[in-house]
Amino acid sequence: MTDHRGSPAARACLQQVFGYSDFRGQQAEIIDCVTQGQDALVLMPTGGGKSLCYQIPALLRPGVGIVISPLIALMEDQVSALRQQGVRAAALNSTRSGAERAATLKAIHAGELDLLYIAPERLLGSDLLEQIAATEIALFAIDEAHCVSQWGHDFRPEYLQLGILGQRFPQVPRIALTATADHRTREEIQQQLLPENAQVFLASFDRPNLRYEVGLKEKPREQLLRFIQTRHAGESGIVYCMSRRGTEQTADWLNARGIPALAYHAGLEQETRQTHQSRFLREDGLVMVATVAFGMGIDKPDVRFVAHLDLPKTLESYYQETGRAGRDGLPAEAWMIYGLQDIYRIRQLSHQSSASEAHKRGEQGRLEALLSFCETSDCRRPALLAHFGEKHPGGCGQCDNCLNPPRTWDATDAARRLLSCVYRTGQRFGAGHVIDVLLGSEGPRAKSLGHDQLSTFGIGRDHPRATWQSIIRQLLAKGFLAPDPAGHGGLRLTDACRPLLRGEISVELREDLPQKAAPSTRKVTATDVAVDPDTWARLRAERRRLAEAEGVPPYVIFHDTTLLAMLEQRPASLAEFSQLPGVGQRKLERYGESFLKALADCEPA
Image 1 (spheres, one colour):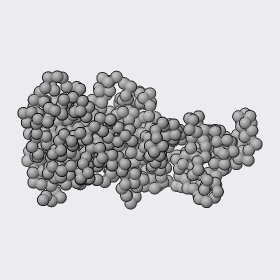
Image 2 (cartoon, one colour):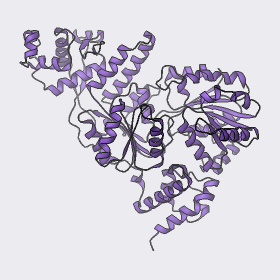
Image 3 (cartoon, helix red, strand yellow):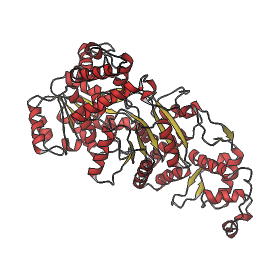
Image 4 (tube, one colour):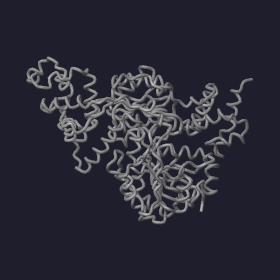
């Protein structure tokens, strides 16, 4: 038996190879489980240290660890980082030449590889399974395991075929890992990829270092620019847009205003996508403006913000996308703005779907969870984590509602008037016309339709147009209203509004006020805790120099957390340098002297 701190062999590997003195959370238990040959499902948030859960067992067990990963970029990132740490790692993918593939296979058969990264298509679509059957396999690690879910937007059909691994290699342990999976997706992973007796390790989905903020869309690009300039100038971030055109226009707009930005979407040439992704990984301070085609498996640890200019489709998508910020554990932000049109769009997508009724109901539930998260006036974390079956007491102090609590008001009477107006105008007109009738606007359209004779004409003059827009948005979010399923922009009542119209329930709504500078607008950056900006810049410059010389992203040399530890601890010898987090034996030998010199050069004379 091992204690919760891990076996001596696992702890020695953690220290000597990866440069850390202690395991985090359930890492030690998971590593012990897989090292002993058992199967495991690991659900752990991004940045929680999932990779170590299969990398260390692969190093401790005889044979080669086979890591199934959906993206080439993720493989290349992981292999580069492992080689820097002295681990014998390789990847088999479409970027490799025939000679490189042959050399990798030869190394496998000679027992000269610790870890092999491979895409599911390549593993299943060739004779590779036959070839690896002749060698000793330490384990199979199935990364991004949520790709097996046909309900998810990252669904990869090849993942459904990975069950064959259990049939062909029943004695080889399997570990399936993901950073995002609700209860339904977890069940799919267990049914499709793992045996019934697999152990399940469910970590908290909370990301305490992430600050959440959700606002109303007014002038989206100007709001984004202000957010970046005031809080994240010179830092790396990801901006998500719904359309391909929107990504390109937003990137051009930011560039014209001094924010270096790149666009990324599936419609770009593959070479352009690869170039942009490579630049984002290797350069500091770049902003990637992208559709959801970008990001899964991106290992860049120093993304300081993820911004959404449009609502994602589900709360699970939002969680996964925001999880790409702050993987290094340092402060980062998830910032999103949305408006009435966003709610229209995703509700119409749900109505127009050709999927089965069961699938539609599932998607509707996910949409409701997303809108509840957006519209809540309480701490955002309970609403977010409840979607993953986790309770949170609230009062996190790290979201906009905690830092600047919104006001609410009893909107029961106003909501009834609006719903009545939607009904009396025929449930086929959009928000603009309904509000015109409520305000008693004497336009030709109202007269030609006879709507100036309705009992609801002019009964809403006690509220400005902006308030009625807010009411419509929130009633749509709460499910009292729905958009016309035909996609013509009209509003219609739902069955849920009947108790409200009958006076059986009341409704509280958020009071939408102009956004003010709140405590949350304090700049969030790694250098918040760096006491010496000049030394910080010198260390980053040295890291960049070494990275360029070796052709790897800077964070492969050292994460920001290691540089910050250098600042705080000021090691003066290799022995002291070896005690820094993230400094294993190989990195100590390769980079210790360079960084000690950089620190010494910054010391006052």
